[in-house]
Image (cartoon, rainbow, N blue to C red):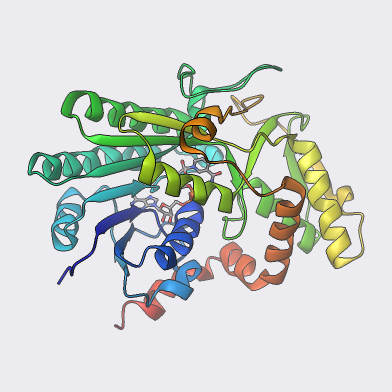
Length: 352
Ligand SMILES: NC(=O)c1ccc[n+]([C@@H]2O[C@H](COP(=O)([O-])OP(=O)(O)OC[C@H]3O[C@@H](n4cnc5c(N)ncnc54)[C@H](O)[C@@H]3O)[C@@H](O)[C@H]2O)c1
């Protein structure tokens, strides 16, 4: 049933923003690999992102939570999985502040389940690779200078980043203790198509289009480091294939922007593309997020020097492309905001 695939890769969380972009990037490029998308379709999972590959011979979807160890074990056996690229997570910092429990179960216990299954297969002689997708947020907050590297101490400040840090430590321990072949990537903030509009870039575009207030936390001077999703996918491809076992890689294009400046830029882009405005008038400063990190910045020297990766997209063009994508996919945004997108699974998969 599994067929003669060179690799059989479980992509967890493949219906989310980064996971679906990676699948759209990799499935057509690696026709000799089987990609098994394991996703339980929370509010953030949107299978319609993957409509263009859903019939590809090297793609399968399994609706499953990483918290269900027994079903995961069956799935790994059925597809003879020999690699994991692990995206599945609760990812929104604000949600983690109001309800941390799901972050602990999915991000920590879910990662533990996957590591256990990987370890068993490795112990059975399977040549197994486990690529864990972490974040720059595990390192906490920076002052005005400097940048995080892979050697920066862990100082997570939100329940989200603490849960991601917990999962990173498990991955590290499975390499050190059991010699499991693991790699970890720490990426900065991504932007691009298919991002759920609770996150800053699509939220601002959506509210700008709808003429709704655009909320900014605190004074808007918090700084984030931004990477276009396609550059992240290329980085993940390189790390998955050539990253050294037990090593971590920090990923960034050195694009630091204050939130307020990014939001103003997006407003001006929407004005240019749609006419009207100025939409900057919609900006409203709201009470700061508790424990809000001041600044993130990543030094990507290791991945650049050791693996030869470099971001190729220029920030202004990539941001414009992103704004154009959301503006020409208003129905995608509308379906996300209304919750309609969750029906895709029922319509396409349950009647097969
Ligand atoms: N988006 C970014 O800017 C960014 C930056 C750095 C790291 N990351 C990391 O990348 C990964 C993906 O982030 P994203 O932005 O695509 O997130 P997302 O919220 O868009 O998608 C998460 C996906 O995981 C699925 N999921 C959630 N809980 C699950 C469970 N228990 N079992 C199976 N599937 C489950 C959801 O249905 C969804 O499809 C996360 O691990 C995140 O920490 C994201």
